[in-house]
Length: 195
Ligand code: UDP
Image (tube, rainbow, N blue to C red; front, top):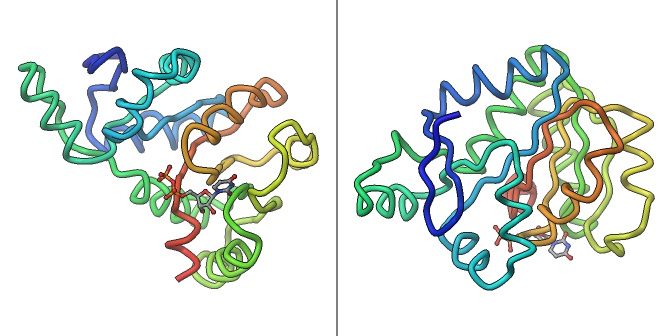
């Protein structure tokens, strides 16, 4: 994996298309587990103050450049990354793929009322994917309800919308319970999908 490290955060050197095809879709097909962090400048700056979070991000399988600020930073250090890979675009591509290939997703995060709308909208727009389960994001991070459900249903995608750093911390703590899955923190994506 080719990297560009910005303030200690290792960004994968790849285009969005290459990332989706060679990492995301291929891993789902091979049932390989991947933890993905979509890191924007806020995440990079926050990682400077929280060494535990920085370590979690560094240990992710892939950190992608979410936003133009990361591309600009890579230019400044003369290791220009190919392009930005916005988290929300990844979510849309993953949903389209899951629909096309009849894969399953688990949704964890956002307010309950928002999440219900998100689930409804996903069902309407992507009728061929399976929603393995969903849970709102206002429970204790040590509550085993969600990971137990994930373990039971073995989803192909585990989308975690708790905002950073919670979403990456939760993924890091829980992903060992499953041998597969694309685990990705998706920030405010459910709010957008709720409309
Ligand atoms: N959220 C949650 N549980 C929490 C805190 C936040 O589910 O304890 C949700 C919140 O409802 C929103 C998302 O996490 O849907 C955070 O979105 P934001 O845009 O703030 O995340 P960022 O993109 O900054 O990571």
